[in-house]
Length: 238
Image 1 (cartoon, one colour):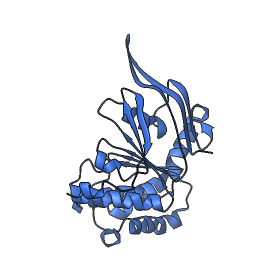
Image 2: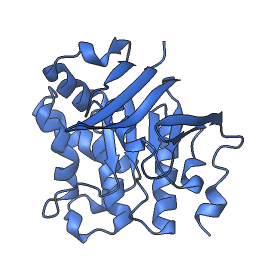
Image 3: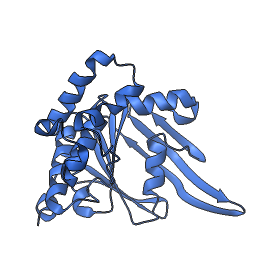
Image 4: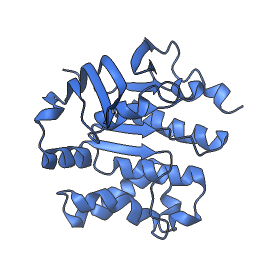
């Protein structure tokens, strides 16, 4: 059974008598362990799709099954629990607390979990080690470079050992060298078995994925496997 099943998904935004169709009958599956990049120009529906897949919004029509259960069957409390326990999020703007240490930032999702507090520090240190930032453990995030901040955000996304990680333009605020390092980490996480959905408008970033879905005007324009994994690596660091 696929981890994600999307069937004829539609999203319509209404403002007064004006209706904007953001998604128009989108259908695809994502298997556990896949690394999928979703591409498209501004206004193509990428953000809308991410919001629905990440339980931040609900579709207007069609169905979305996560882990075998239809989104519209989840209560609000269940939505919050699934987002905290089964999903990890990495955003372009990092969304870190500036005057708080790396360790405390990474612990944040555990505040809303059922994990015993006695285990928080061990789990956080493990996640921080996974992104190569153990030497920055007690630094304030305001003291870090952009690439280091995004690594902290990735560690925070890993803390509850989610089934899937959503990465929304994770290299958008980074220089090419830092961006390359972040994509290497995301690729390594996929190699370790994490399912990844990457939202990006950058072709060279998408080449780190195994599969690329391209949206245009709310519809899937193409859905294809990447011929050579990480084929865009050389282009990224030039």
